[in-house]
Image (cartoon, rainbow, N blue to C red; front, side, top):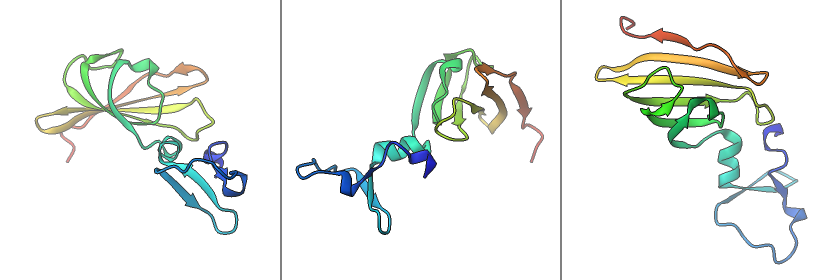
Length: 132
């Protein structure tokens, strides 16, 4: 539960009159805890949506749909696809970005790069045309 530290509350810590959350989960065997759906999704990196802006600013875990003409700094300046951001754990600023470019035949290029020690490392590109 290291990734959930600081965001879960023990039921015993809740005082009478604590508002109930419609979107929370209770878990545990003898030491019951609760976590809201939003915090659980953040801790697990299950969110995203669409993304516009600088690719260098995108370090929040999740999967994002992109119009690459609206994403600055990406290796593509047109077309559509996804940017997936993965973190090793929630306490780290390091991450891996995977960028999927979609064409009429599917995902034609996958690029990836890492952010470690406060810097982005060079993007590597895998062309998937010809791979079956």
